[in-house]
Image (cartoon, rainbow, N blue to C red; front, side, top):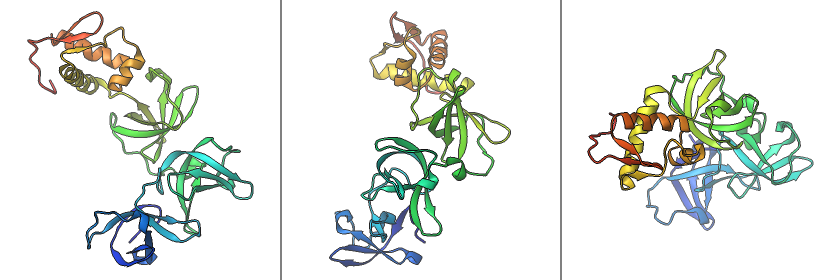
Amino acid sequence: MAFIGQRNLLPVVRESASGLFLDAGELGEILLPGRYIPHDRGANDKLDVFIYRDSEDRLVATTETPLAMVGDFACLRVVSVNRQIGAFLDWGLPKDLLLPFREQTGPLLVGQKVIVCVCLDTKTDRMMASARLNRHLSEDTPAYRDGAPVTFLITGRTELGYTAIVQNAHLGLLYHDNLSASLEVGQVVKGFVRTVRPGGKIDLSLDAAGYQRVSGLADRIVEALARNGGELELDDNSSPVAVREAFGVSKGAFKQAIGKLYKQRRIRFANPGIQLLENANWSPGE
């Protein structure tokens, strides 16, 4: 069975001057326009396509991938506003995505970016966006273990920290005191679950916790030293931004990791920077 608003692997039924018609099961035959036909396809190949409705409201297939599919949360840019219908968003396909007025939380201007969930209107089978995010979050209790790696979308900033949607499903909060640099609304971040609170809200961190964080980061630092001729410019005095750009972790985590390496006599401090000791016996995971 094929699904609107998702990628589907579909067989070719027949060819026409307009392109290929694909078997979409209960949705019928769907056209893949000629400009999207892969040049290297085999005669019996199934095609990986995304199904949506074109400007004439017909189901159509494309090999292009939108910025978000049904069920995804994303930060999209407003390209036009229709006073009778709503705002239209750029989601990476020729036909812009409608954000109806009823699904908005406030007035929008052209060029503005907005966090939305991509939805399928069950009454019309038309795709649309909704900025009323809470309606589209999972009602299931989060089952993440503490320290689990996750991906999350930054949706706002509060006095406590940054609100986020975790794995397209649950609410999370990344506290300011766990950050070495500011983030942007709409930014997609890889991090970790600190804990899941009663009620299902998730505390987030950009760094892994405890020994796992230090051990894994120490391995990465040694590998980076080896690739860079045994030297790195980073040390205890480096800026949090430089550390985050190099290793994607906080300065505190970096200092813990190089402190561990120093105690194990794997590195020395070059002031500035650190150097890998030639006689260091090291293997990943130690």
